Amino acid sequence: MKTKLLTICLLLFTSQVFAEECKGNYWDNCYSAYTFTGKYAGDKYIGEWKDNKMHGLGTYTYAIGDKYVGEFKNGDFHGLGTYTYASGDKYFGEYKNNNRHGQGTYTYASGDKYFGEYKNDERYGQGTYTYANGDKYAGGFKNGKFHGQGTYTYANGDKEVGQWENDAYVGK
Image (tube, rainbow, N blue to C red; front, side, top):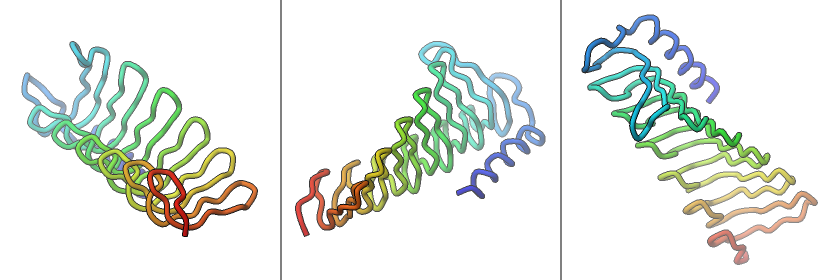
């Protein structure tokens, strides 16, 4: 993941140096900054454009303080990126059509952390959720909840190993 992040940073820098600056009313295969008006007033994008859409590498900063740095496809977050929330939460990982999708790490301002798979913006598949208090769950997830085979380890060392359904331990 660190290699991918370094690659994105390098590409962002080189795209600013080598891409042609956008001109006119139609932006295609170029690089520019844009401040939105109307529904998205105050939001800003700096990056690559294709067919008048954010496409390639860029940075989207929301007026509310959230920020996304990464890959875009046809105006959507798509590929590898980092989304930093004004609240202090942060997600680094894969996106598909504006949703967290694939491998990723979500770090909460509270100190909780999830590393694992996402599907359509939900924890889905295999992952590990670590709580700030030291508790940890490693196993299956479905629709954002503990589901399938998993192990919940309490900070004191006690464990629950077995099947989980909708965040509930159902036994071995």
